[in-house]
Length: 330
Image 1 (tube, rainbow, N blue to C red):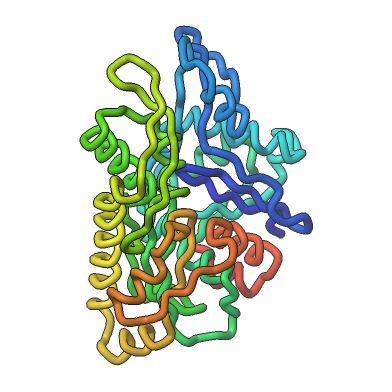
Image 2 (cartoon, rainbow, N blue to C red; image 1 turned 180 degrees about the horizontal axis):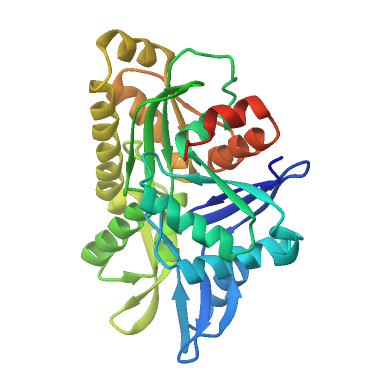
C-alpha cells in the first residue's frame, strides 16, 4: 500500500498522506550559515529568514527546472519536511511513496529522485508524470478513455500533454516555468525604472499586477535597490506587460507543437473539449482567456491549480486503479 505522495517542485514541495490529505506545502529552499554550511532554516522558515538581512546567509534551492540540482540538499530538505508531518527516518524506511516527475523524465533523472527519496528515509519510491497526476487531480476518472489536453505550468518547468486515463499520447516537459517570468520582470523593471529587484519582489509583481488583459492599470509598490541604495518603487502593469506576454506566447507555441504531433481528428477533438490548465503558473491573470483566444478553444482553470498534481497523486495512492494507470514502468 502506498503511504504518501510527494511533489518535489522547483518552487514548492507538497506532501499528501494517505487518509489525511495534503499536509504540507512549503517553499523548496534551505538557508545555510555562510562559511559553515550549517542548515539554519528550511521551507517557510527559510523564506521568512530571507525577508530580513541576507548577510552571512547562503540560499540553496535544490530543485531547478523540475530536476534535482543538489541531491544532498534535496534529501536534507525532504527529510525535514517528512519529520514535520510526523514521519521520522526510522518510520519512513517502511513507507512507499509516489513521486511526481516531469513529462518524459529520463532514467538518470528518476535515479536522482530515487536517491533523494532513499536518503530522506523513504523505503520504496515509485514515479508518475506530472500531467497525468494533474489530470486526475482535476477530476479525470480511471474509466474515461476520451483524450484530454493538459498544460501544467509550474515554477521551474511546464508539462504539456495529450493524454487519457490510459496514458500520455504526446507530451513534452519544458525547462520553462513561471520563474522564467520572474527573471523577465526583474530585467524589465531594471531597464524601465533603474531599480534592481529581488526574486521575491518580482514574484509579488507577477502574482499581483502581472496581467494579459490589455489596459490593465493595476500597480504595486515593491522594495528594490537603486545602485546599492534600498528604495521603494511603484510598478504599473504596463511596465511588465512585455515579459508577461512573451511568457504566454512561448507557452502557446509549445502547445501548438504538441497539437501538431497528433492526428488532425484527435487534435480537433481535444480542442473541442478544451485545455485543462494547472500548476501555480496557470494563475497568471488573464492566461486562460489568452490561451482561449490564441488557440481557438476553451482553457479551463481549476479552483486550486497549484495543488492539482499533488491532489492527483493523493487520489492515486488511495485508489489502486488510478495508481496502476499513472505509475511509470521501471
